[in-house]
Length: 142
Image 1 (tube, one colour):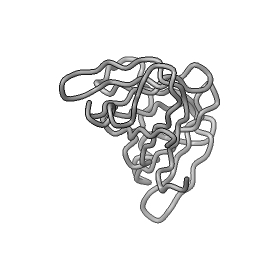
Image 2: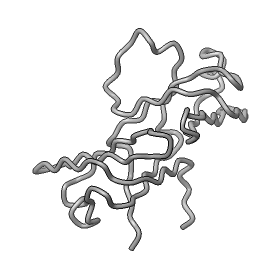
Image 3: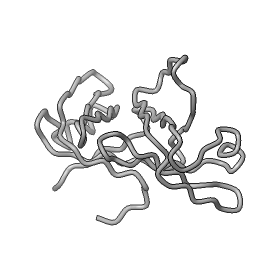
């Protein structure tokens, strides 16, 4: 499958909390990382989402918020991944930043060059990626 989303997380579903409108799904990724997604209950049913089933979580890089020095704050975003900047590619206005998580997964974000400077992002520096669960798109093999 070819997709334009920079972030593709393959894993196994460990939790499915169905509700009347939305369903919370937790994907277990490599290295113990967990990705939380919120999808409509109709989508969960149509996809046959169930504990133990393999799935993929997709996320566009501009939907990722980066921050540094997050230790003294709490956030409403369900997915909070702390790692190290593995790669930073600057463009004319925006930069693509790759954060390597302890389990080896990579989270890619597209942020402004101004944000890169303000956050003092550089290769090897710690950073946290925030991802709202409602931004994650889930897919399963047909």
